[in-house]
Length: 159
Length: 159
Image (cartoon, rainbow over all chains, first blue to last red; front, side, top):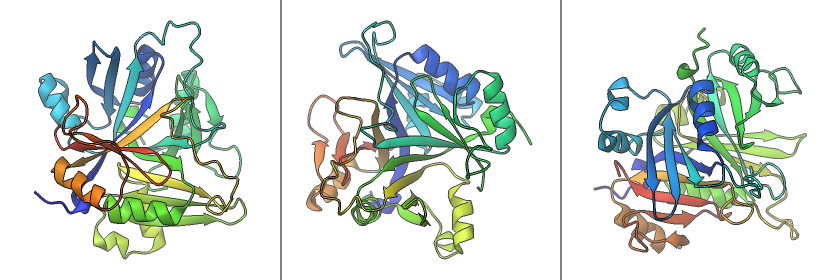
């Protein structure tokens, strides 16, 4: 066992979402990630959802134990936390995305082969844009929002 | 060029930091990441810092162009944004970590071979703990804070 910190790995990024049905659809169908597994915590009334790109089919069809082990052994994992009930709670004010005061968290960035084609497809699917690829000075990058308003940057591979 | 979204990759996670000297020290010396490159935006008065684990020495000693290309071609990259002046601005209230109201963003997770040894080392180096490995019900995972108070989970590989 090494305690050399350079052997560590950046496994995941977590944020809270209001309605997992909407988030799962956004991150899988629209952004192309795979849902590796979901864990329910009955007593504390929350669920965790783990997503990533490039998940082999052999993992997606493996046991929950195998899928969990996989999710905690690689980089590039997105973890979404759903506190039960927020999706139907009328008084729920929504989660804070970090890009308005008080600021802090910013975004995740997704790299794609062709930003224009990727953004055209997202636009056709009704995704909300903060910045389209040709807006502003920074050409060929875009920012979209997920169902909770969190920002996702779309940028070219090797930018 | 494919527009199949499953070909996308989860490249980076970005948050804002007050004092890059402190953050670079935390994420490199204490957490073991490498600083791949830094970009300064003179007119808009901000800098971006890109970190990752497992960066080959050949990249770290390559040209800035090569290092940038590398940073935008792989998963598991941490991007920190420094808006110039915050580190000395007395009235600066700090960034919002997302774990107090208004909640939203949660944490990044770092996987290690030996959680106890990793946490012992971080503790000896004065890192602040939200949760030590043996606190609470979830054994063998810990939460520490970075210089801005953002949470970093320390969890075992294959958890």
